[in-house]
Length: 84
Image (cartoon, rainbow, N blue to C red; front, side, top):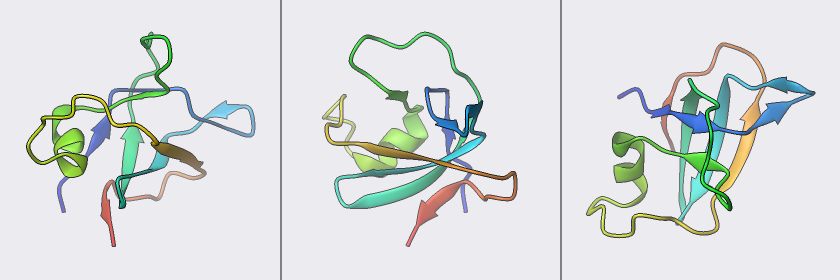
C-alpha cells in the first residue's frame, strides 16, 4: 500500500495536533499522515500532495475538491493509504 502524505492540515485532536487524519471526499476515503501545518490559502482546511490528490481525482482535472471531510485520528499506529 502506498504512503500518502498530507503536506498541510489544520486538524487537531483534543487540543494537540493530530499526526494522522481520515480524509473523505467524492465517495473515497484515505488515511493521511500529517507532516506539515504551514500556511493555507484562505477557505481551505487541507492541502494534499499530488499522490493523494490523484486518489480522489485520477485525471487531476479538478484542482480543488469540494465537500472534503477531515477527521483527526488519535494515536501513532495508523497506516497511511486508501481505506476500503
